[in-house]
Length: 120
Image (tube, rainbow, N blue to C red; front, side, top):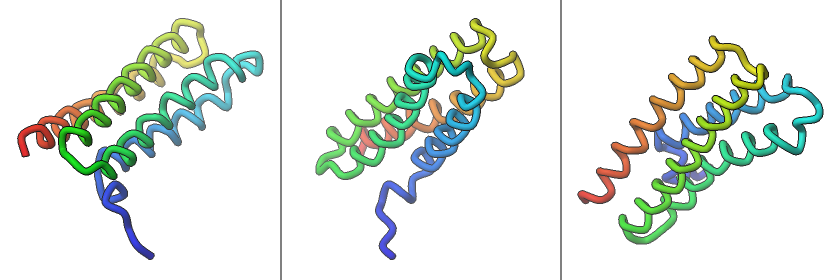
């Protein structure tokens, strides 16, 4: 089976791990958040990996970098929603800290990848 270029990227692999963690965590949110915060968190987290994959399919590094910027913006959206989840008592401080570590790592990797694309 053919492995596509985006599948080899560490940033894409890390973003998949974040999606899985978001899905596992949000299954314990209140049922009345199904179409609210749960949906928003899941969609934003999926957007990160989707934009990485889509960007790699573009022709120029400038185009690829733009999709990495969009992925980064979605990552910040996830961070905001995770903070709100903590504020609302849906996740505890330990879970918040764990998510922040994952987000910090992915943020740093996305920024480095973005710089590499623009400098190539």
